[in-house]
Length: 327
Image (cartoon, rainbow, N blue to C red; front, top):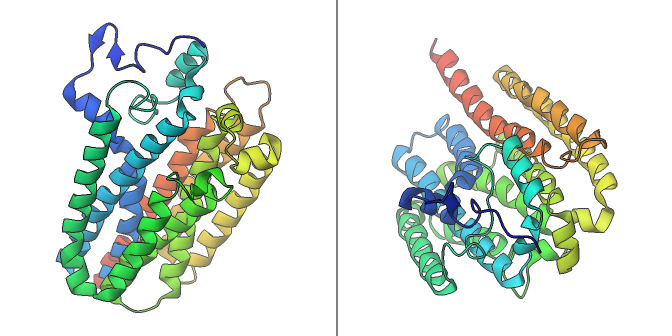
């Protein structure tokens, strides 16, 4: 096994990373963006119906801590299984990948594997994060009642057991479904907790969000195909193979934009979501280019643009609708 690059071990050009940068790497702060924005889509729709601003502010904050817990526990259990260590065997491939992806979003390796944190420290951090999530959930539960507890329990199960034993959904061919369903629920539940009424518009938005973020998961795990295969994990790529997964991604992208088109039935402002289409096209083009050694890496920032763009543009569409209502 080749030596892991110095940057992965917590050093850059011979200098120790700053405390802030270490915390960013350990907690993977940038990876919480999709979580928070998913909840904001539901909150934004809810606010067009009921102006509960305090609860609307608390929900994304609570989701932020949930996201920290999900990502951190994911790293912890992947460290225990050893799967993440296998992803950085090739230094040259890693260096090329960093040129393709920005330092802000590129995952530089498992913090436990890189020696940035010990298992004991990790358990303490998980406890602190979980405590913060519970504390921010208290006023939300007081507002929404027992339904919030039930919804929260579902969210915790899907997030924690994504990699945690003995269930480990991610290693049983259910990881992609878990991610898609989790983000769809995150959007819909954020809406439902505030309004406490069913809405087909909320359902359609949540499905779009879940599908978009689920695609990020599929594309991202393609870069770790060999590692997942060697460790015995059965994700979508291992089960079907990379070539078939590319076709699956294409079909899911088509489905995503068909669903976005259906949102126009509720309001024409949703047409702005189609601004993510160029990034989706680039994703497919990169994946199809067999002559490119980094064909599995280049699509990652593009599919991330699709997911984050979908979330942001849905919120913008809802804001535009509200503004136009008062115009």
